[in-house]
Length: 72
Image (cartoon, rainbow, N blue to C red; front, side, top):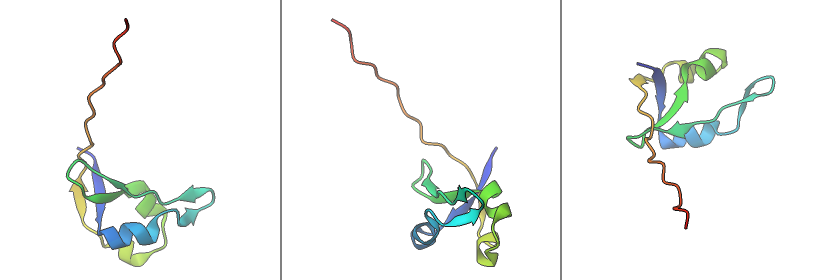
């Protein structure tokens, strides 16, 4: 199972679109449970110490049902 770092809504807002490496920007997203998360890869490349202390959780992707319009 893929693990990700858990963020508070305030932390997610603070990091959103902040550059952490050349041509790389944080992009916090929400999982199926509504948790704000960020990838281990983003955290490992960042030089923000508090970010490395955020808890790891299992990633639960949002499941979308595909629905295509019916053809007449």
